[in-house]
Amino acid sequence: MDYSEKIAAAKEVFGKLLEEQLKRVEGMKAQGGFTDYAALPKIVIGVCGGDGIGPAITSQAQRILEYLLSDEVKSGKVEFKVIDGLTIERRVEEHAAIPADVLAELKTCDVILKGPTTTPRKGDPWPNVESANVAMRKELDLFANVRPVRIPEQGIDWTFYRENTEGAYAVGSKGVHVTEDLGVDFTVVTTQGCERIIRAAFEYAKANKKTRVTAVTKANIIKTTDGKFLDVFREVAKDYPEITADDWYIDIMTAKLIDENRRREFQVMVLPNLYGDIITDEAAEFQGGVGTAGSANIGKRYAMFEAIHGSAPRMVQEGREKYADPCSVIRAAAMLLAHIGYTEQADKLYQALDICTVTEKKYVITGRDTGATGAQFADYIMETIAAL
Ligand code: IPM
Ligand code: MG
Image (cartoon, rainbow, N blue to C red; front, side):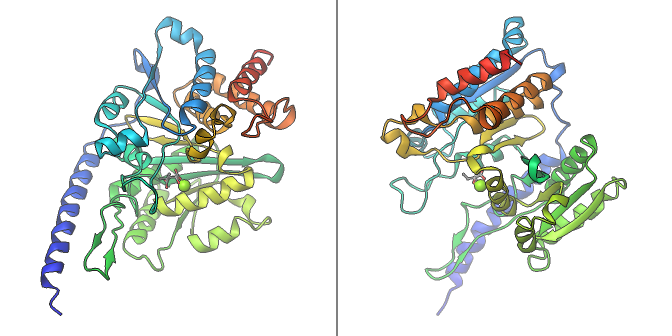
């Protein structure tokens, strides 16, 4: 068999990928510092509902944000901007992970609250458009995916710093079928990409009086890319001598998270993209499932806050979206508030969430007409805040 033509075609694809990635490295080298929200004349909060149940739950979180920031809106310090059109239909129509007009709108915001978006799976009626989530993280260079998991009664207080723009996701939709029988995907890491996420994890630890940062890789096997992640981790750790820095392999870390005697010891974990994706679902499950978790996607210029569950299109088909649980995106809204400096409002929202979902629980949300609607729940949160 002569494969030379197929190999040449694959090499061409690979060459283009390398050019793109090297350009990204240059971009990272030229990057400035983090946005200082207090110094901005105005903070624009984009509210991008996504699709499926997204618009229904995101609009409830928006009501709560508007309530908590009503003074700031009045004074002109904060402005809300609703961005429609990040739907699977529009994305398919435009053959784009994010339609161009939506992306342009997103870039006029400083921070974004985002609802879930449908990611086509193999076998779905949709063509294989890239995940809108992944595209937004890349387009806005949101390199730090911060996912806290807290279960105080079990002594669990974890913060995951998942790298969000590189690893298996960097060119995840650009692998090559070299021949009918041979498929190759690419995993990419860069020194700059590792350094900024690892430093962000240590800075978080330092600012929040955490004493330990743990890197999670599979550097014993994936020697080049995970190896680089670990090398950079060890280098950066030297700048934080007061913090214990250790490293674990992803397989045993996955096991240790269910070891009740050991798991309490972990505090901040920093990991490449795919491991972060997997382990944060596992971790969120202890807290009550992915529906209870919010996630922050932070870059130097932009930041985006989202629920980590899917768009539940079936609920919409059955006309049940108004019964969808808005808690995860409300939690994301609390993270947004804290990120832009409104920590007092964020704390109130966290307290209210705790009262409304754990201690008092006047309403239950079942996802059907047997439970409260998202709007009733949002009212309940606001009443609870008013009574604090
Ligand atoms: C997440 C999700 C996404 C991811 C999907 C929807 C693309 O699982 O935010 O963890 O894999 O990153
Ligand atoms: Mg995930």
